[in-house]
Length: 297
Image (tube, rainbow, N blue to C red; front, side, top):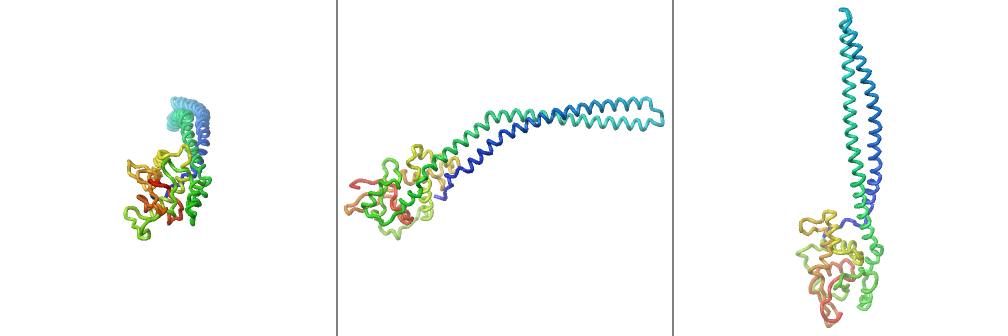
């Protein structure tokens, strides 16, 4: 049960959406500007190539009638004119190739604008809505925290407190069990062999912060927590991840919940969950979620 990512902060998703929305127009503008630029450049090059061919023809004609004295310079003139023409033709080839790439890129960008960008925006909006739905149940998170940490209650106060809005409703079959009625023999000497106490504390704090405030949400479920785990890489081929929210949910509402039975003296005897109850008490909680087994409550 390691520290939890803050799933209540949608700012990164909203920033990504903003960037995505702002990206679509510039991409199309780049393609359009490239297309507009390539046409004039090509026309100028074609005009220059025409002039270059005229210079080559003129140089070749001059070479054909040159006398022995001027032949060398006329020959150099032909080579120079031909070299300039080759440079212009190579530049024109480069522009044609670039124009082809721009046309391909423009088609890809248009396809991206029609398909990928809207799909990506839709996905981000859905994730943002999910985060907002998640956070909307943390409006009273302070009350939930205070509700779990009210000490010095009498049994009647604790019983009344179970029904207060400060403690959210639990899944069917579970109820808030007041810690001041639970007796844990030799609690001070309780050993934490399977899981370190600090690890349990961290997990229970995350449970109180990230799960309890959302339990009453109609769309909230263990599957929803598992999907959040998978989205951020806390799912690994069936191996229980130490920071998994679904794992935290299972610890309290899975196959081995905290289970208490009333005694004739009015206290509660735990058949499972002694370590969790002890840690909860150490954290200042007044209640833990669990099952009540048999007898009067």
